[in-house]
Length: 368
Image (cartoon, rainbow, N blue to C red):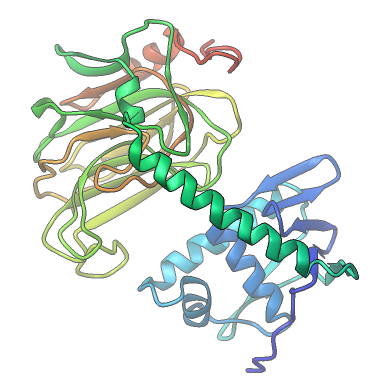
């Protein structure tokens, strides 16, 4: 294969057919429509652009986009599918081809939107860097010498037991309003463990962020092996679930992994309030059921994960349990965890009741 790359060094954007890709905002545009892309999806797009018109096989894309992280062909296919959906939301033409036996390439012509800057900016750059260094030293001293309160501690968390365990802001009209930077909420309670049993999760969410963002996470993970627990999250705008019963690799795509993720077709990253739910019947084919606004959306088989999900980590709302990453930007309403499978009618009833919580300046609180 010809390894000659197209240089994007002096580009502020590029045209792929009639769709414009802004390199600064990592967003696709056409007319008045736009589609933001996650870092991984945008990196995949730029790789296809750089090697255009040569097709790239899945293993080549793994090396160039994932850069040494062990992944699988299915993950590449999934990311290609997400990128195709982003283009289709703007334009009906095919933008990514799969040539059997050769790989993937862009199906539309690419035109670079170059920018030339003749101003000698180096004196300004050097001065700016010096200012940044001095400011960073001062801010570091200020940060280390100032008492700090975790953002999670600024939230008042109510935990109610009964048919379900409910996590909510003590102020009855407020959601968990998270900035996507350092906000999260943490809860310790033995009832949040689900062990080997069935369970369900329900809440209301509002976000417009594309990427991987946690709704709730109760997992132990060390990025090496033996992940254990569960996570309900948004991945590139779509609801997703991970079940991890330990004893295996940290990376879910590997054959001996300790975890499996299930990606629904429920898109929620449109800036509107949505009622979201997932029920998990652990020993039943199609036992994982995703619901969006009271309606069944997708179903998956969880029977490959029969081990215990118990772990000693806290449950976090808006962040991974083991790391301060996957931070949610938006609003999450009252969260309910049930140690049983909710019926479709129960989920419809919850949606029909509407959402009583919101954030200051976030608009309506959702519901019907």
